[in-house]
Image (cartoon, rainbow, N blue to C red; front, side, top):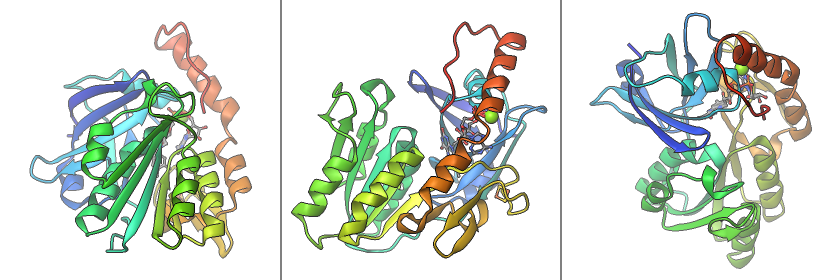
Length: 286
Ligand code: FAD
Ligand code: FES
Ligand code: MG
């Protein structure tokens, strides 16, 4: 169970794995996630279900190697098995026929955005996708995104591919050019990106859904690790989310909470590098 059936390198730091998990594949919906434990001593890490195939009994996970656990998983190969994959967890994305919608995906957020854009289009929406990354080497799935979007805008922060812009720039231009035309926006990517997407849409009063990346432990609403402050009180991302109204999130509280364990995360990488593998250089997390 949880055998890795396929592995693809999507960018220098991004890996795709197709994993055997029939019970999850049968029940998964866009927007949901799993909690993976790589080996018997591993920690629990949440990853979005980027795709699933109920017939083959597989789920597709895409992850960026940012720290000890994701680097360890990235070193696993076809034929290896994860110790545990639990899910599907969280509420699915609310897919309806809204009209013209914009999907904003940043970096590894392109992966979880794919099934959402695909299902929104199947439901009859006009889907405009804006995908971006720091540079070209971090972009992937442009063709897949194009296939599920009516319009696609690709940008990079450094201009190495597509338009040289942050994703919020084409978003603002779209909202200005089509007053009242865009009825809903989804944003998935780094927390700071989702904050600025929400700030961009707020003056236009366009409802904006963000998928929050809080620190999770049990994923069942018991530990409180994923607590997030919202205008209408505290919520647990694992059981109340992961999708929330971006205009109701207390972004400064969230940004400080996700960075809370930085020194422990760096120590875990160093311990793993020194004792388990012989990496010469490991980037700092975050
Ligand atoms: P660490 O060095 O331990 O941490 C690096 C950073 O990752 C931390 O600063 C923190 O912000 C975050 N993080 C650390 N531990 C956790 C944890 N237990 N839970 C959540 N975040 C943590 N990443 C992807 O690449 N692809 C995905 O599809 C994806 N989906 C996610 C879905 C949800 C619902 C959430 C909450 C997070 C998702 N993430 C995804 C983020 C992913 O869980 C973290 O990158 C991963 O846990 C980092 O683990 P690490 O040990 O490699 O890095
Ligand atoms: Fe423990 Fe959400 S992860 S309460
Ligand atoms: Mg970790």
